[in-house]
Length: 592
Image (cartoon, rainbow, N blue to C red; front, top):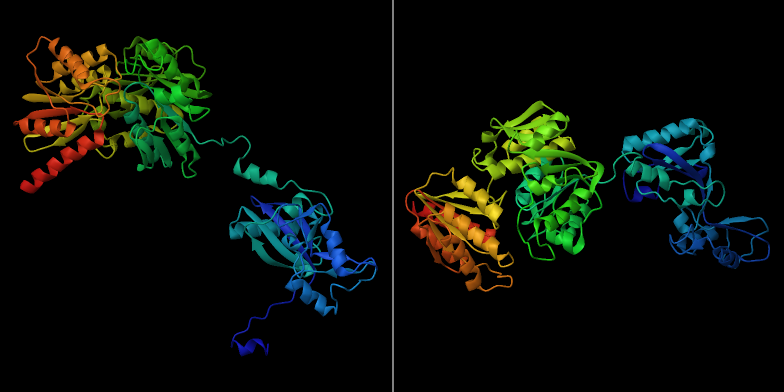
């Protein structure tokens, strides 16, 4: 007291606790092991001095450096020398036979201590007290240090006390005690982290197909996020976690899937899975809960030994074959090649269709199976003949008030996948009505930019099926002049490039042909020639011109715009096109 008062007017006086050092291990609020810890010591034999006894003890094969073995080597430090000084001993002293000389003031195994298992001797009241302590402090793994004469009596009777609670307790003293029964304390930890019978993998919805994959992926991710899950998803635009872009680019392969699945913050994965990654490296996962096949259309044929739709179907079904036996395959009932797989999959199958009277839908309804259809203006789940209407299509922004049929198909696919996974109908409906198409949320998917006298739409359509979907949408757009900016993709078949030119001629009054940044094995003249052949095959007076650079093509199109003009840029370099249009929008606002 006199010494302490030299430094402070306030002095803490602690009760001096005597007894042995015990460690009680509690995992998941259950006591699993208890050990009596003995400080590092040697026992005299009447012949060897203390240093020799320490060296002999360190020859024990169970002892190693630090935590490399079940026991730690005893080293001589300041604590050791101070203890020996109190006994008037040195390292040269020869203890009497049977004399125990303690070399450390604490019983930690890390300082050379040993342990004796006492799990079966602990009193029930002490067990209850230890488990209560773990809950009060809030630790699911904790080591409680107790000083007491024994643990066979309640602490209130033995006069013992809890000294401290450790948040990262060592397991060595329980796994391999110096005396007593070893306790497998690792097993309760694993059982706590991965309870028996509980799913230990995060849910995965994998999407594949020719068109609509990215939009459906984004919409599904939005549904998952709105159901309170932290979602990671991959798209042809990049890797996202909760709508935060982490890596830009086409990230639809197995490396990108692994990126999401390895992220410790992700609770649910929605993975766009393209054919390129499947052919190169397979999938980035072993199994998934839901597999969605949007459609199988002619695209990228003649590459990597994929020459026809039958070959392409074989590649796409890899995703469906990865679905767990009790999972779901979501198929497009309006797509011929998708339906060829319906009876040959191990998982359960659910269908979606834009037509309630589709023969496959009617067959499934008779069998009492689950489908999702567009009927009487609604997105509707059918369980057999029983209908559950999710939401009116006009209230779902991404469908452009129901004018974009291909977007309705994407909504059907996403809604059905969410439903068969187990999300509630009201939550799905809320997510559908709050998914707003925009350059930020759905870049390159029907992004419409309004100017004072005209509109510009940017879309990623790049194959005949995509062009036909845009054509169907533009039929519902009133405009006195429709201008299209298109290009041919070099790694498509001649007939695919011609077909894109042909469809463009049907839907536009004037066409601007631009060049892709990457020609993929062809010349500009060759690609443009095929597009022009397609344009000229239509019996319609359509004007066209070639402007190689996309930036110049967009600027020129906007310079041609009159009152009521609708410009459509079908671009694969989405970000560049969006930036240009947004710059023009900002300039128009400034000029006003």
